[in-house]
Length: 282
Image 1: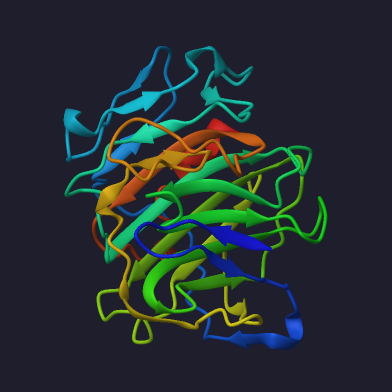
Image 2 (image 1 turned 120 degrees about the vertical axis):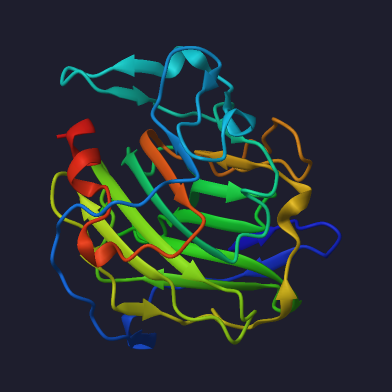
């Protein structure tokens, strides 16, 4: 059972059952994997201390607050990592024009999925405004049968629209690289499918072409919920206030290798930053 509290709206209860019988298919994109050059707006690699410096074009006003600096570590391969994440651990990205109500945007996030031991069905990878816009892992089907879920809140209908790509299953104990580009500027019911690529460990990301849409996945109507009321959290549920805080629910059992955000649509069929970023965990 999914429950989101999204002020000023009532609690939204959404039931997601991952059934392939309810899946739809979209056409596949080219599979060439070569590095392309795009300039991120927000770009972090884990570093020591309570701040992650934003190396993207949005500048220092989007430096991220780190709740638990002690989770920073240098891996045996020489690259940084932040984790393992528990209930009180989060990285907070400030609210502002570079993060609020992003209707045309792309992401690349490298993370480790530790498994279902946190006793949370839903584990947040990225969360804006306390569930207003979410990337999470649904662990309903066990440690080796989990799925990425992309949710965005609306002002009407069921109050939420979600997309569950099913070509790549997420498995406990593995490293993942998700690439998402999504133009939602047309609004709920008119938005295109997100373009999603998922890579496991050092393998090239796979374009997701099948989607589970059981359980009223696309029932949200009206307009998109105004997520400017809250910040973004990596690895936990964000606050619904525009400050460095966390609701400390549905945290990721794992950790973060890298985060990139582009305020444009990136064609990840050309590989994006995968060839560079995969060195962090291989």
